[in-house]
Length: 368
Image (cartoon, rainbow, N blue to C red; front, side, top):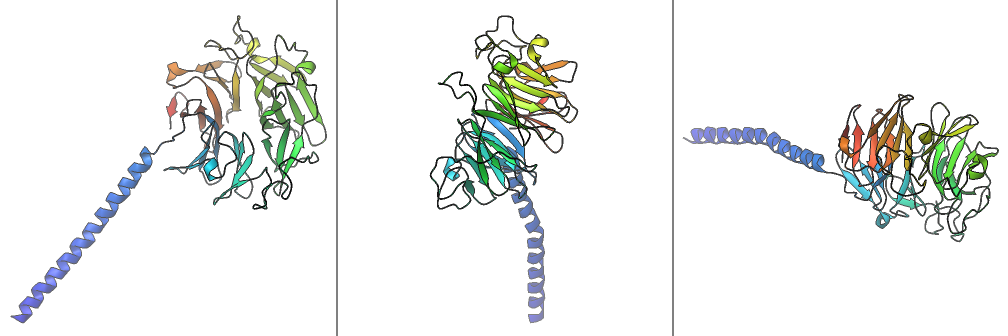
């Protein structure tokens, strides 16, 4: 009798063990699917506009906003950084990565970096942080000597007529060559955009002109060198880009796109009749079908040039023909702030309403 009880008890234990083994994978699968569902529904929370898009060496995507700081997307979820986490400012102008894998942010009021653990501010003295620019000095910037190398990172310097250069070791404050002050009430020579070019050239766009530096001397492009009448057709440069052919594109807020090829500079928008006949060449809103207020210019791997306009959506130029994409093509907004091609040759577009799209070759697909 005892043997039968023991046998029954043994059979019961084995049955329970097998049922637990079979049940565990089901529980794990349920948890995994719930996590996946959460990741898939996680979306970007920015609403103030996407000023910068960047893919780092690990494949993460970084998005810089106009007012809400930075978000990083690992393919499943977002992590956010704001001034509460140590960023200098919540308005992000550009995002870059150095050779050590540190992510750098150019903000409206200073330069910050992220080493994977913490945010470091780089452009104001703070005795608690030995990596800052000129430690043990006051907050006043001290000018360094102009020079450059291939691995430099370059940053705007807020409202100052200057830039920052990071050489891999320290950050240098560099004042631009002094220019004639056209309007003492405007920050006309504050840097609005930076582009690396051929022949060792780095280009700095400011509202009132362009400074090109090759490591030795400067090339200056402004109303005076162009022969423009500032009262009729003033430069107001928001974006600069040198393409793979060495052509220099200047996106203006008001007079459209200027194109420099060799020693020749033309108004590209005017040449292609993309300036409204009644345009006042200023910041007033332009009608659809124009290319007058250009805030971003980029090139894809096929050599197409892309323009992001404030009022008239996205433009693509293949060298011969134009294509224009607006809200009628499914976009939620006609104001384009950023265009970025990732390592997979996919084009990303950041809009002024905080939405982000990818172009699939024919249409725009909303990502976040």
